[in-house]
Image 1 (cartoon, rainbow, N blue to C red):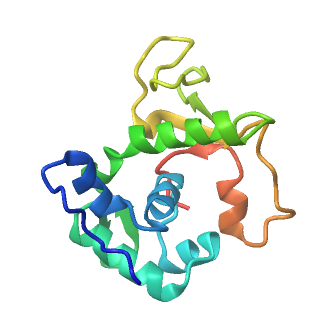
Image 2: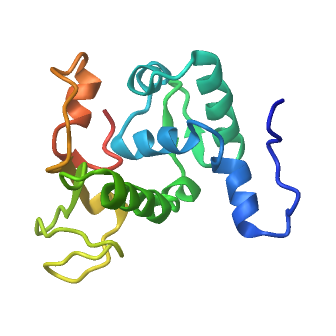
Length: 167
């Protein structure tokens, strides 16, 4: 029996948010968009998602104005999509805390001064609340490479770089 895609309690902001980003693969698509993935084929390769599922999720994210698709067929996060960053960051931190015994998988630093970014999104060096385009992401101590990068997109995603920088 298929699970419903809507929640009975539509008078709840969390329930409404889950209707948009709570389906399998959706938050991983959004995460990869933060990492700079823009092309359909690159999302499919990075996530190992069935192409039909990816098509459905991308269409829904565009319809909800979380992603925009340009004339070249590339996807980018809209302001509404970028506003998901605190939730993505919090889920990543939760996963690191409880499921990554060797430490953070992806380290976040302030690009301006290379200060580590804390759980609230503040640079521990300068104290600034760091905006998404100013976040440098790099493999952390808990990062486990799955072997040599099989493609240029993987190589770029696994190297230090700024969020939202197109791959």
